Length: 223
Length: 223
DNA sequence: AGGAAATATTGTGCATGCAATTTTTGAATC
DNA sequence: GATTCAAAAATTGCATGCACAATATTTCCT
Image (cartoon, rainbow over all chains, first blue to last red):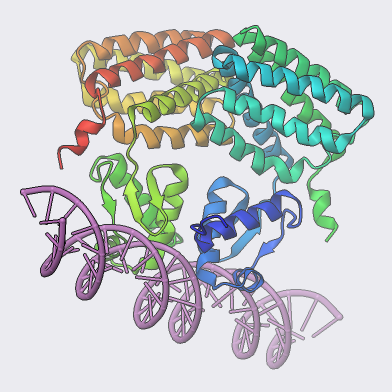
């Protein structure tokens, strides 16, 4: 067994974050400290510390003396997040075009080829998973861990709002075509094109989201 | 008097961060929880929560069961931070070129003009302060609070390492010339040029730093 | 009956204490 | 003199408890 060096606080932060990201805890849900402590079998202290940590990443909102809730978001804030996400992804793509190693470039090409099959089979599950890998390649390919970490954090923060991303008809093929443009730019080392195509790609994702979830407020009514 | 709604934890986080940024707490300094609690007149609980918060911003390093230290940094990590900083600043400049309001553009021009005097008078203090304002205008001008916050966080994280920034001879005039190039690109709405010139400007800052502090390891020997 | 004030309840903010781990100190051995 | 090991001290991780603020509920008045 691996060394159990994680503190309870860290483990809690991870588990709560996962629950938010996979949708078990929906935006707006109240995060009662006693409840969480009871559910995870600890005292309130590590729960509180975990909540502070998640608050700085933006996954939850911490209102002094009024408790924590899973971050809700206005459509305006959501747009801001998507724009920031797009700029960071585009920057990662730009740096990737400049500094990916031959091995990384080969991996990128191979993943892209593999995703073509998933489009043909219309395998949304597999494509969604591969899509995460695809984007993660650029984070790593930027060869800048700070930028990569920031981008990944932003991605997690948006995760609760993009579950239906690939359900719109025709999204898979469109996404794949976009990926192709980004990939070619990166493989040929065209930094400006890499930036532009990735920016375009991510803004399309935003559009797809807007179509599927016109207003986050509707979610609240489902309570 | 303003509403005293801040919790002790938040106030502590701010004060400790300030102490790190202005250099009172140097990189590598051990942050003993008892000591901090005593110094600020509270118990360890809010201190611990403040430390967690600072750890997520990267200002301090939290080693499980081994306490916290003010983040030290290898020259390689420093370069990574500067590159990330440059990319974010450049992105803010790019967005500013696209979306600054007329009022914001006028303010930018006015600040730039005012800084010319400081260069002539060789007033390093005033220039350093105005420089922060200058860059902050682009954060706001991006009209993207998420991006602005990320960039500002990164700037704070680098603050402990850039104290001597403008001491190198001729830096002030060079910096001002660079600012002029960025400003003209933004005021004319040339997004690509704004990105490029800001990127260039920030990489020069990095060079200036490298000259003044060839190796952060030397700091440690001063203990 | 509707609304405002008062009260009860719930939940957060913080202090304190204990157990476990890490670090330091000291001695003994090579 | 250096190195290794063990015991002591220091420091973190976590649990518990209490006070106060925020919210929910009830009561009272118009």
